[in-house]
Length: 192
Image 1 (cartoon, rainbow, N blue to C red):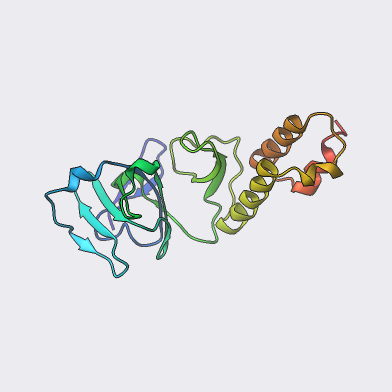
Image 2 (spheres, rainbow, N blue to C red):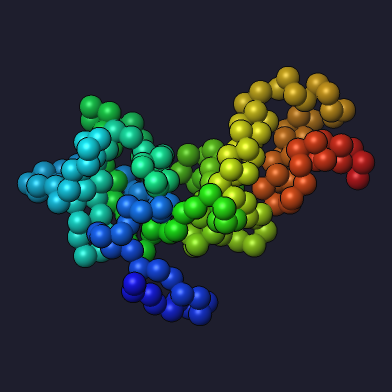
């Protein structure tokens, strides 16, 4: 297995066309499908996803993103890039990171692209130590809580507050930068 040393003196596994599809996390960038107009896919999966390999990375055309077999692959796109439900994305080989259910690999932050709270891998350049790392299961739990906090208001009637947005920000910040539970944060809101 090929490994390199990065600037942090930590070994980083090198992904390529023969191993990127095994237990990985990646955020693909949407690209215009015309880039692949005259090309034939190097591989087509049983579910119909098409893959085009380059020395720099991989293009993927697929109608399903998120969970792909043993991988967590997301695409940053808008509606204009969708044709027949399929989206085209590109990812550099260096944008793939290991994924598993037991290690604390994920943190949550607001995506600059979607403006929603999403999970990211600790190996991504945007990671800062202020964010709490969690397992995949714990990350999903916190994301569900964040969705309720940001999209509903019924939960707030049980917490004394004068400013809903201030309360939301307090809870959101606490969930993504501390190990406190949502219940602990709700109790702590007015006690400071």
